[in-house]
Image (cartoon, rainbow, N blue to C red; front, side):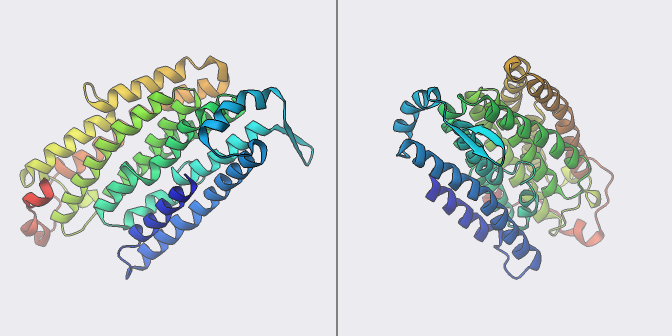
Length: 335
């Protein structure tokens, strides 16, 4: 897992820096690489701790031994602090997930990764790099289940990220950055689901999010291509007259992201909110997570349709040279 994990980070660095002659693209790629190294250090420490205590890093062997290991009561002592060994391992693994999946405070690389071409943004934000952390936490759930402290940390970080990135998305004017912050926020939802032990729900949202977020990015790429690479939604408007197919595809993706029934986002988000509501074993952390994800739903709908209406329904603010160029994407892009 670790070698594949690192390979994803390396390839993502190269993809984000695709426009290598742009200083901003090089800076964004370097930021993504460095921030992910911070998270990966924690991930490596977690793996080494597992190997030290269990003598193996095979999933099945570790999971079969973890209950007996916890019963032995291994405790770490450091500078007057005490922490169970299983909690230390889980928290170290989660630091790696935070870096890879853009969780606060290691989220700073994710919005800047928009410097790459739009298909690359769709790939990174929908299906590959950012989902690796969520998958890893769910994959290691037999370990996390024995550490309530680690589960509370996962829930708390996910809730803060879901709420904070949604608030940031409310004021973004770059069409791709709006979607990027929505990715951070939705990943927070997935971690909340994992933190309250609803791992299948987290993976369900991961899958639904992959589809509608990829569609949203590709529709945004079609818009950017049509308006001569201008990404400021304040300088768009009335594009539905020129791009009816893109309009429909972005509307479908926006409805799913906002959680409007019967679209996919509604079912997975509703299950996450329900799971957070009944997470009484986490105390105030579960209560905080519930209100964070619930309020985040309304903010998600607001920034999504703010972007949608400014792009397709606002008064026509296109410059003359842009208006002369606006057209629906070629069929090869539409497909």
